Each structure stands twice: as structure tokens, then as C-alpha cells.
Length: 108
Image (cartoon, rainbow, N blue to C red; front, side):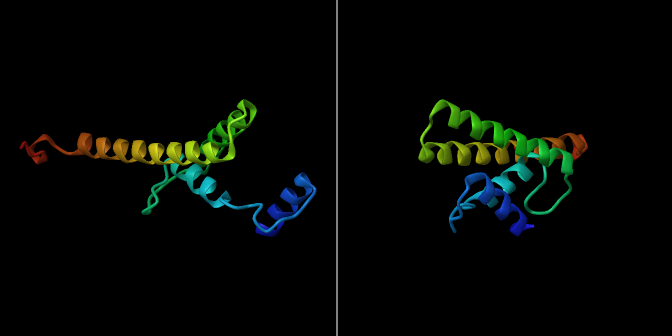
């Protein structure tokens, strides 16, 4: 699979460089987390991960069209991925609290 992706990217760029695919794995992990799959194991759907990938692609393309520098694109992308993972964790925690009976919830 990696070889096929390498051929596609090299044909699009009309050149090959060892650092061309640098940080692609972070985009893949970010798309998976954005889709709702837990990194510590859990369940997820492929369709949700694909939607997460589209959001990352649209964000990246929008920043390129706006003329944002490469450094700030990486900063914004990492911030967005961290924020999204926090949102996923909060939603899961909220679901656990809703599923727990009221007698199990301790008040401090």
C-alpha cells in the first residue's frame, strides 16, 4: 500500500524525495481520532474515519488557499487534532456519566 501511495504522490509532484510523505501518519491518526475511534482501543467506523479525513483535507486545502505558511499550517493542524481528541474524550466521559445510575455518582 505504501508503494502505491508513493507512486501516486510522486506522479502528482513529478518528483521524488525521501521526506515527501513526512507527517502523513499524523494526518491518518488524526482522521481516525476525529472519526471517533479511541487510540487506547475501542470501536470505530470506517465511514466516520473517512469523514474525519475529509475534514482534515478541507482544513489543509483552505489554509493553502489562504496563503498560510507551512509552519502555521502544522501548528493549526496539531492544535485541531489535540482539540478534537479532547472533545472525543469529554463525550465518552459524558456518556459514561449518563449511563451510570444516580446511586453510583458520588458527590464531593
